[in-house]
Image 1 (cartoon, one colour):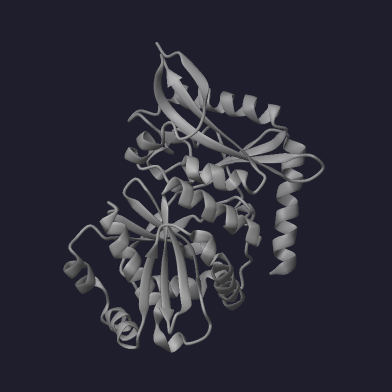
Image 2: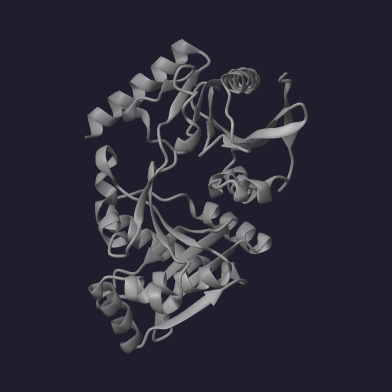
Length: 344
């Protein structure tokens, strides 16, 4: 007979187990630190059945308006068992309701992996598509490359034009560097490159202070590294890569609008593949891409670039909402819909 209990989790406890169950980086303790540095409240919980851990989730609470909050479980919950029973889903729902009410959240949003969604449909509502995008919500699709083979096979798997671009960058004098310390010495240049990239592609950045905290925590936890491609000692590309489990994730990257004929971005990713492989990664995620109904205008050029490398689209499945205060929830959804229609 099931006996479900819930416990708060501190620090990096469960990180290793999460990684072995294919959890996304956004459920890691390092990601928690990043979000706390944004001023959000992040809590980690494990649900147990007769003291056996069976479901894990990391919940982010962020302000909305008038003292109200939202809660979001990025790519969660994570199943630590092969069986997600209807009884477990109901227990999970009850725990979410209890936690959200204490945090004054008007709704809870979560997006578990496709493998465990079967029993969620009848107990939770799908989030309206027009309300998907927020300061918290993760991309629905990522472009992921298998880097597990030999360097020779990996290079041969690249399209001809991509191989040419990498070799061209090298012939034209590219200098590559992997940096695992002294991250902050690159922060000013990194933010300049990120600003140029955002201006070219029409998306918004976090404040510089956020990237500073990300650099500090990534270096401190030894979970990330920088890929730097320079010409004549001038950095033209800086990418931040972090590894969780067997997946390397291209978290942030900025490139210069100058000397783009040198093709440094291709070489930066190739260098990132090799550095990730040497650290035990089997897959390399380029991050979010536009796909099907999620074709955001600002992602079109970035998606086209990422797909110059081989890979597959990983679909992270539906987003669910659990309204806590239905009046405030529907006002929030209407506001999102009106803003998007007004600005489209």
